[in-house]
Image (cartoon, rainbow, N blue to C red; front, side, top):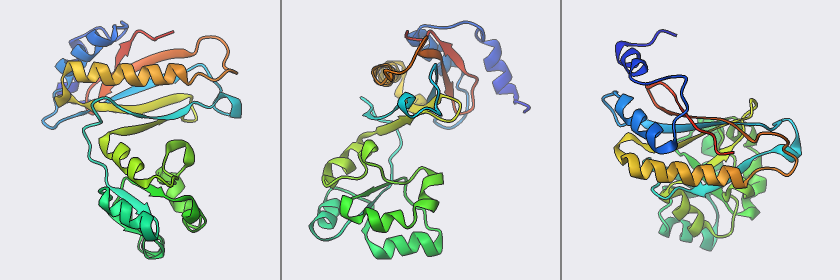
Length: 228
């Protein structure tokens, strides 16, 4: 992959091999994020676990102190009073069979998060094959299958993120936008890092946090001293 001049200039601005403390890493990142739009800042954490083992999974949800900077569109699958509550709480779309059919027949995905009540999971499960690959399948562990739809909607709108291992034992997660500035990004980074450390599986052996990298949408990755 060939990188442009701005990327090449950014690479020259700091030591690619050095591990920086979190505050310094964020400072470097903000100096090297040169795109004309408000770049997303992402955290990539490689863990010393085996993602193939059920007892070494790392997954959780967290409402970042300062949110993610992105307003998420929420779809709620519910009926009756729960549907009314979802609409009142600010859900972007609320419905049941008609919205399931719209997703199934029209390939409609104009939403970022799906929340549903437990009694509707049978219906939602019918389209699991299309929701799953897009990361949109509701799950009790992520708080998106719940009777308390109002709370779930508020958390998503406030900047709740879900972190989970991929097949290569890496967690990829946004921690905000460049426009947040250093202080807010460091606070979001620290909150997410603490949550990942606390989520260490009992079955994990050896070094848990292998490497931590922060990167902007268009910029190079900056290595952070791992929290052991």
